Amino acid sequence: MPHAVNVLLVDGHPIYRRGLADCLNSLPGVETVTESDRVPSASEAPGSPAADLVMLDRELPRACDFVRELNGRARVIAFYATDADDITDVIAAGAVGLLHKSSLTPETLGAAVDAACSGASVISPEVLSSLVRVPRPRASLATSEGPAAAPRLTAREQQVLALIAQGHATREVAARLCYSERTVKNVLHDVVTKLGARSRAQAVADAVRIGLI
Image (cartoon, rainbow, N blue to C red; front, side, top):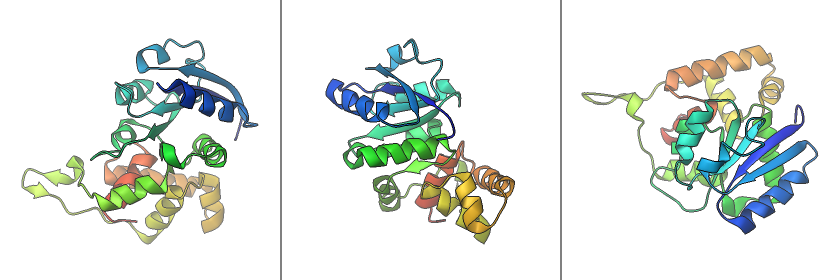
């Protein structure tokens, strides 16, 4: 992690939330963990204004609204437990990560926190497989005459986005591909714009869903 991280943890299940809090507190880069059991009280929690990272149960009422209200002030990793037709709504709202609760271990949690704080997207294999299994074209890729053709990504854009999808930070992608970090950031900006996405995580989700990576 690039610096000490303040975490806001929002989950309605007290035992699960306590377990997550204990794991987060054990991570060397985490400075504070503030807990909340629901979205309305999360924004009023003492540690909320200082939060660098929000970890949120996607299935809580108004979860996506809360992510939109954060407006990038803190990076957001969302958890989910039950499959739905569209599990990426929270990414469309601005979250940088989406993880299935059943796949979480102290090790994967630590890796997710580290990746998110380093600027990488965090998408679990369960999410990626769901996107492949249930393809759904984004509205922004359609016109009044029907779905538009999927955007084309260059080989470099595909390489960079695939590594981001695997959880690599920008500097790691740059090192692997022998690019500068500025080049990687420019490529990601172009991909996000090309796909009409709000974030890298949404760009990854959309690219997988429409078969670009």
